[in-house]
Image 1: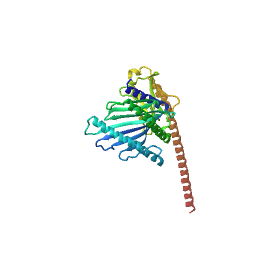
Image 2 (image 1 turned 45 degrees about the vertical axis):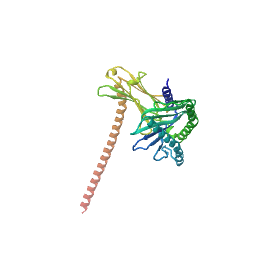
Image 3 (image 1 turned 120 degrees about the vertical axis):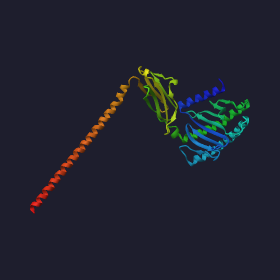
Length: 359
């Protein structure tokens, strides 16, 4: 297995850990631009899990805290991070010009990007620290220190690899300098924003049946309103997972209210509708003790329509009955008022007649 394969394996492993055990991460997403653009020369966005908590650019040269819990003390502490981000700025600037010269680039806009950060496990123990760079969309290099023992560096396509002395030096820096700084910052940010990033919102699950013009059906497995974003959503047919190549969708998307949604769907042909298959949408999430399941059996549409329509009919009957009662009461009240008005009119006429006779 090559270095790149090892790196991808490590990232996949920690993605699974993060999805299943509630680990947390802090990442800096940095961009350095050579050439004339309307954007700052250097920008950094800081992410705590999936929430933006900070911003820095080369124009303001100040760290701006953008979390949900902001105080004057936090803003003062954010300025301490300006030194670290300023160092990153100058390092990426020097590196970009070196790569530009190495590749014999002259005019135009050239972009270097970097992602760097760390993760902790649910018990607060460090999991990894990693940096990865690219230049003009070409993979440049990465370094990752994980399991508190392993250090891997890949020089990529643009740079020379480390010799054993540089490898040892970088490993020492990652283990004893960058990792402690990153983990300490991550824990502080996590403590400030715990009410938001550590909340657990369970998903709502729906199995939707949509009829197409062709007569086919689209079976849609939808989970929505959940947080955090990691969820396992599976569509089963007769108890067996539907093959991924048969499914559409599958990307977790923000809902706009701080929660997420995910849908997977499959098209069921008219031929398949003649056969009876049971489709089940199942979801597991950090907020759930047990899996959620919703099922539908093809060929049983009439039964489902009856089950769905019976409560609706009963509700309509109750509503109509209430309306009739209200109308009857109003008619009775109007009739009584009319009778009283007639009596009052007769009494008035009698009084007028009696007064005329006395005269």
